[in-house]
Image (cartoon, rainbow, N blue to C red):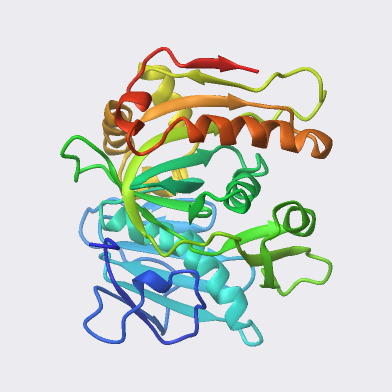
Length: 324
Protein backbone atom coordinates (compact mmCIF):
# COMPACT_ATOMS: atom_id res chain seq x y z
CA UNK A 1 0.00 0.00 0.00
CA UNK A 2 1.43 3.39 -0.99
CA UNK A 3 -1.37 5.63 0.38
CA UNK A 4 -4.05 5.08 3.04
CA UNK A 5 -6.89 6.07 0.70
CA UNK A 6 -7.47 7.18 -2.89
CA UNK A 7 -9.09 10.37 -4.17
CA UNK A 8 -10.93 11.63 -7.24
CA UNK A 9 -11.37 15.38 -7.75
CA UNK A 10 -13.24 17.65 -10.14
CA UNK A 11 -10.52 20.33 -10.05
CA UNK A 12 -6.81 20.37 -10.86
CA UNK A 13 -4.82 19.86 -7.65
CA UNK A 14 -1.32 19.73 -9.13
CA UNK A 15 1.26 17.39 -7.67
CA UNK A 16 0.53 18.06 -4.02
CA UNK A 17 -1.49 14.87 -3.49
CA UNK A 18 -0.55 13.12 -6.73
CA UNK A 19 -0.03 9.69 -5.08
CA UNK A 20 -3.63 9.77 -3.83
CA UNK A 21 -5.32 10.70 -7.11
CA UNK A 22 -7.08 8.06 -9.24
CA UNK A 23 -9.50 8.33 -12.14
CA UNK A 24 -12.06 5.80 -10.87
CA UNK A 25 -13.10 3.72 -7.86
CA UNK A 26 -11.75 6.29 -5.42
CA UNK A 27 -12.28 6.01 -1.66
CA UNK A 28 -12.86 9.77 -1.40
CA UNK A 29 -14.68 12.13 -3.78
CA UNK A 30 -13.80 15.83 -3.93
CA UNK A 31 -16.38 17.92 -5.79
CA UNK A 32 -18.19 21.24 -5.93
CA UNK A 33 -21.62 21.34 -4.35
CA UNK A 34 -23.91 23.11 -1.94
CA UNK A 35 -22.55 23.45 1.58
CA UNK A 36 -25.07 24.25 4.36
CA UNK A 37 -24.69 27.16 6.75
CA UNK A 38 -24.84 24.81 9.74
CA UNK A 39 -24.90 21.12 10.53
CA UNK A 40 -28.43 19.85 11.23
CA UNK A 41 -29.22 18.71 14.75
CA UNK A 42 -30.19 15.04 14.68
CA UNK A 43 -31.76 13.81 17.91
CA UNK A 44 -29.56 14.54 20.88
CA UNK A 45 -26.23 14.05 19.09
CA UNK A 46 -23.47 16.40 20.17
CA UNK A 47 -22.22 19.09 17.79
CA UNK A 48 -18.87 20.73 18.55
CA UNK A 49 -18.54 24.40 17.62
CA UNK A 50 -15.28 26.22 16.91
CA UNK A 51 -14.43 29.66 15.60
CA UNK A 52 -15.11 28.71 11.98
CA UNK A 53 -16.14 25.06 12.11
CA UNK A 54 -18.76 22.61 13.37
CA UNK A 55 -18.28 18.88 13.84
CA UNK A 56 -20.25 15.83 14.84
CA UNK A 57 -19.59 12.10 14.61
CA UNK A 58 -19.99 11.99 10.79
CA UNK A 59 -19.73 15.53 9.39
CA UNK A 60 -17.34 18.45 9.52
CA UNK A 61 -18.34 21.92 8.32
CA UNK A 62 -15.67 24.57 7.75
CA UNK A 63 -16.16 28.20 6.71
CA UNK A 64 -12.95 29.92 5.60
CA UNK A 65 -12.76 33.75 5.75
CA UNK A 66 -11.69 33.90 2.08
CA UNK A 67 -15.21 32.90 1.00
CA UNK A 68 -14.82 29.12 0.75
CA UNK A 69 -16.90 26.53 2.61
CA UNK A 70 -16.25 22.81 3.01
CA UNK A 71 -18.36 19.87 4.11
CA UNK A 72 -16.36 16.74 4.94
CA UNK A 73 -18.57 13.70 5.42
CA UNK A 74 -17.92 10.24 6.77
CA UNK A 75 -14.33 10.13 5.57
CA UNK A 76 -15.64 9.62 2.01
CA UNK A 77 -16.29 13.06 0.52
CA UNK A 78 -15.20 16.70 0.58
CA UNK A 79 -17.73 19.10 -0.91
CA UNK A 80 -16.61 22.67 -1.51
CA UNK A 81 -18.62 25.83 -2.17
CA UNK A 82 -17.27 29.32 -2.84
CA UNK A 83 -18.22 32.92 -3.30
CA UNK A 84 -18.03 34.47 -6.74
CA UNK A 85 -14.50 35.36 -7.78
CA UNK A 86 -12.71 32.91 -5.50
CA UNK A 87 -10.07 31.07 -7.54
CA UNK A 88 -9.32 27.36 -7.70
CA UNK A 89 -5.96 28.18 -6.09
CA UNK A 90 -7.65 29.59 -2.99
CA UNK A 91 -10.04 26.63 -2.79
CA UNK A 92 -7.23 24.09 -3.17
CA UNK A 93 -5.09 25.78 -0.51
CA UNK A 94 -7.65 25.14 2.22
CA UNK A 95 -9.02 21.96 0.69
CA UNK A 96 -5.57 20.33 0.96
CA UNK A 97 -4.98 21.91 4.36
CA UNK A 98 -7.77 22.16 6.89
CA UNK A 99 -10.34 20.04 5.01
CA UNK A 100 -7.69 17.41 4.27
CA UNK A 101 -6.84 17.24 7.96
CA UNK A 102 -10.50 16.79 8.93
CA UNK A 103 -10.80 13.99 6.35
CA UNK A 104 -7.85 12.20 7.95
CA UNK A 105 -9.46 12.37 11.39
CA UNK A 106 -12.70 10.97 9.99
CA UNK A 107 -10.71 8.07 8.53
CA UNK A 108 -9.05 7.38 11.90
CA UNK A 109 -5.70 8.74 10.74
CA UNK A 110 -3.69 11.25 12.75
CA UNK A 111 -2.27 14.20 10.77
CA UNK A 112 0.78 15.84 12.30
CA UNK A 113 2.06 19.30 11.35
CA UNK A 114 5.42 18.05 10.13
CA UNK A 115 7.85 17.85 7.24
CA UNK A 116 10.47 15.18 6.74
CA UNK A 117 12.86 12.99 4.79
CA UNK A 118 13.10 9.22 4.39
CA UNK A 119 16.14 6.94 4.70
CA UNK A 120 15.41 3.46 3.40
CA UNK A 121 11.87 3.01 4.72
CA UNK A 122 12.47 5.05 7.91
CA UNK A 123 10.86 8.51 8.02
CA UNK A 124 12.57 11.21 10.06
CA UNK A 125 10.16 14.09 10.58
CA UNK A 126 10.53 17.62 11.91
CA UNK A 127 7.70 19.32 13.71
CA UNK A 128 7.18 22.44 15.79
CA UNK A 129 5.29 25.72 15.84
CA UNK A 130 4.50 27.60 12.64
CA UNK A 131 7.64 29.35 11.47
CA UNK A 132 10.01 26.95 13.26
CA UNK A 133 11.62 25.99 9.95
CA UNK A 134 10.22 22.50 9.28
CA UNK A 135 9.84 22.93 5.53
CA UNK A 136 13.11 24.80 5.06
CA UNK A 137 15.10 22.18 6.97
CA UNK A 138 13.55 19.29 5.01
CA UNK A 139 14.17 21.08 1.72
CA UNK A 140 17.77 21.84 2.66
CA UNK A 141 18.38 18.23 3.66
CA UNK A 142 16.96 17.15 0.29
CA UNK A 143 19.48 19.50 -1.32
CA UNK A 144 22.19 17.55 0.52
CA UNK A 145 21.05 14.21 -0.87
CA UNK A 146 18.36 12.97 1.51
CA UNK A 147 15.08 11.87 -0.07
CA UNK A 148 12.26 14.33 0.59
CA UNK A 149 9.14 12.65 2.03
CA UNK A 150 6.45 15.16 3.00
CA UNK A 151 5.73 18.80 3.78
CA UNK A 152 3.18 20.39 6.10
CA UNK A 153 1.18 17.22 6.86
CA UNK A 154 2.46 13.80 7.91
CA UNK A 155 -0.34 11.22 8.08
CA UNK A 156 0.12 8.65 10.84
CA UNK A 157 -1.70 5.33 11.20
CA UNK A 158 -1.36 4.39 14.86
CA UNK A 159 -3.38 1.19 14.39
CA UNK A 160 -1.07 -0.43 11.84
CA UNK A 161 1.85 -1.11 14.16
CA UNK A 162 3.48 -4.54 13.99
CA UNK A 163 6.41 -3.08 15.89
CA UNK A 164 6.44 0.20 13.96
CA UNK A 165 4.19 3.17 13.18
CA UNK A 166 3.19 3.45 9.51
CA UNK A 167 3.09 6.96 8.08
CA UNK A 168 2.24 8.54 4.74
CA UNK A 169 3.12 11.68 2.83
CA UNK A 170 0.39 14.27 3.27
CA UNK A 171 1.79 16.79 0.77
CA UNK A 172 4.41 16.11 -1.90
CA UNK A 173 5.11 19.78 -2.71
CA UNK A 174 6.83 22.25 -0.42
CA UNK A 175 5.53 25.65 0.61
CA UNK A 176 8.51 27.99 1.03
CA UNK A 177 9.08 31.69 1.52
CA UNK A 178 11.25 33.44 -1.06
CA UNK A 179 14.39 33.47 1.11
CA UNK A 180 14.00 29.74 1.87
CA UNK A 181 13.91 28.97 -1.85
CA UNK A 182 17.33 30.56 -2.21
CA UNK A 183 18.70 28.68 0.81
CA UNK A 184 17.53 25.24 -0.37
CA UNK A 185 17.78 25.37 -4.19
CA UNK A 186 14.19 24.11 -4.45
CA UNK A 187 12.49 24.79 -7.79
CA UNK A 188 10.03 27.65 -7.48
CA UNK A 189 6.40 27.05 -8.50
CA UNK A 190 3.28 29.18 -8.38
CA UNK A 191 2.42 31.51 -5.51
CA UNK A 192 0.57 29.92 -2.61
CA UNK A 193 -2.02 32.71 -2.33
CA UNK A 194 -3.80 35.14 -4.63
CA UNK A 195 -2.52 37.96 -2.43
CA UNK A 196 -0.20 40.66 -3.75
CA UNK A 197 3.12 40.73 -1.92
CA UNK A 198 2.63 37.28 -0.34
CA UNK A 199 6.06 35.84 -1.11
CA UNK A 200 5.40 32.19 -0.33
CA UNK A 201 5.53 29.67 -3.16
CA UNK A 202 4.94 26.03 -3.92
CA UNK A 203 8.26 24.39 -4.66
CA UNK A 204 9.81 21.09 -5.69
CA UNK A 205 12.82 20.00 -3.61
CA UNK A 206 16.08 18.99 -5.25
CA UNK A 207 15.75 15.32 -4.28
CA UNK A 208 12.01 14.79 -4.58
CA UNK A 209 11.30 11.12 -4.01
CA UNK A 210 8.18 9.30 -5.16
CA UNK A 211 7.94 7.19 -1.99
CA UNK A 212 4.75 7.92 -0.04
CA UNK A 213 4.79 5.34 2.77
CA UNK A 214 7.31 4.40 5.44
CA UNK A 215 7.63 3.73 9.13
CA UNK A 216 7.96 6.71 11.42
CA UNK A 217 11.38 6.43 13.03
CA UNK A 218 11.87 9.83 14.68
CA UNK A 219 10.08 13.09 15.40
CA UNK A 220 12.34 16.07 16.09
CA UNK A 221 10.58 19.02 17.70
CA UNK A 222 12.30 22.17 16.51
CA UNK A 223 13.22 24.93 18.88
CA UNK A 224 12.50 28.45 17.70
CA UNK A 225 14.63 30.80 19.80
CA UNK A 226 15.33 33.76 17.53
CA UNK A 227 16.69 36.14 20.10
CA UNK A 228 20.40 35.29 20.23
CA UNK A 229 22.40 33.48 17.57
CA UNK A 230 25.05 32.46 20.11
CA UNK A 231 22.78 31.35 22.97
CA UNK A 232 21.53 27.88 21.95
CA UNK A 233 23.99 25.21 20.89
CA UNK A 234 22.82 22.55 18.49
CA UNK A 235 21.46 19.67 20.51
CA UNK A 236 19.08 16.75 20.28
CA UNK A 237 17.62 15.65 23.59
CA UNK A 238 15.37 12.61 24.02
CA UNK A 239 11.88 13.15 25.41
CA UNK A 240 10.11 10.40 27.32
CA UNK A 241 6.68 9.44 28.62
CA UNK A 242 4.23 12.20 29.43
CA UNK A 243 6.73 14.84 28.37
CA UNK A 244 6.71 13.37 24.86
CA UNK A 245 2.92 13.27 24.71
CA UNK A 246 2.58 16.91 25.75
CA UNK A 247 5.15 18.00 23.17
CA UNK A 248 3.48 15.95 20.44
CA UNK A 249 0.07 17.40 21.30
CA UNK A 250 1.33 20.80 20.16
CA UNK A 251 2.38 19.25 16.83
CA UNK A 252 -1.01 17.79 15.94
CA UNK A 253 -2.42 19.28 12.73
CA UNK A 254 -5.40 21.48 13.61
CA UNK A 255 -5.65 20.20 17.22
CA UNK A 256 -9.06 21.83 17.72
CA UNK A 257 -10.38 19.67 14.88
CA UNK A 258 -8.96 16.59 16.57
CA UNK A 259 -10.74 17.41 19.80
CA UNK A 260 -14.02 18.08 17.96
CA UNK A 261 -13.93 14.96 15.79
CA UNK A 262 -12.08 12.48 18.01
CA UNK A 263 -12.31 13.86 21.53
CA UNK A 264 -9.47 14.23 24.03
CA UNK A 265 -9.28 10.58 25.11
CA UNK A 266 -8.90 9.19 21.59
CA UNK A 267 -6.35 11.85 20.63
CA UNK A 268 -4.11 11.26 23.62
CA UNK A 269 -4.38 7.50 23.26
CA UNK A 270 -3.08 7.86 19.69
CA UNK A 271 -0.22 10.08 20.85
CA UNK A 272 0.63 7.54 23.53
CA UNK A 273 0.75 4.81 20.87
CA UNK A 274 3.23 6.86 18.84
CA UNK A 275 5.73 7.32 21.63
CA UNK A 276 5.83 3.56 22.18
CA UNK A 277 7.48 3.11 18.78
CA UNK A 278 8.97 6.47 17.75
CA UNK A 279 12.02 8.31 19.01
CA UNK A 280 10.85 11.80 20.05
CA UNK A 281 13.40 14.51 20.72
CA UNK A 282 13.93 18.22 21.03
CA UNK A 283 16.17 19.66 18.33
CA UNK A 284 17.52 23.03 19.42
CA UNK A 285 19.70 25.13 17.15
CA UNK A 286 20.42 28.80 16.40
CA UNK A 287 17.45 30.23 14.56
CA UNK A 288 18.82 33.10 12.52
CA UNK A 289 19.71 33.02 8.78
CA UNK A 290 23.45 33.46 9.35
CA UNK A 291 23.53 30.31 11.51
CA UNK A 292 21.19 28.17 9.42
CA UNK A 293 24.00 25.96 8.10
CA UNK A 294 25.16 25.20 11.65
CA UNK A 295 21.84 23.54 12.45
CA UNK A 296 21.69 21.95 9.00
CA UNK A 297 25.15 20.41 9.41
CA UNK A 298 24.13 19.03 12.77
CA UNK A 299 20.89 17.52 11.44
CA UNK A 300 22.75 15.99 8.49
CA UNK A 301 25.30 14.35 10.78
CA UNK A 302 22.57 12.94 13.02
CA UNK A 303 20.63 11.56 10.06
CA UNK A 304 23.75 10.01 8.56
CA UNK A 305 24.05 8.02 11.78
CA UNK A 306 20.57 6.61 11.13
CA UNK A 307 21.65 4.46 8.16
CA UNK A 308 19.08 1.78 7.24
CA UNK A 309 21.20 -0.95 8.81
CA UNK A 310 21.40 1.03 12.04
CA UNK A 311 17.96 2.60 12.16
CA UNK A 312 16.17 0.22 14.52
CA UNK A 313 18.92 0.12 17.14
CA UNK A 314 19.81 3.80 16.84
CA UNK A 315 16.35 5.22 17.40
CA UNK A 316 15.53 2.82 20.21
CA UNK A 317 18.06 4.42 22.56
CA UNK A 318 16.60 6.23 25.56
CA UNK A 319 19.67 8.33 26.28
CA UNK A 320 20.46 10.13 23.04
CA UNK A 321 21.70 13.58 24.05
CA UNK A 322 24.09 15.06 21.50
CA UNK A 323 25.56 18.53 21.74
CA UNK A 324 27.72 20.42 19.30
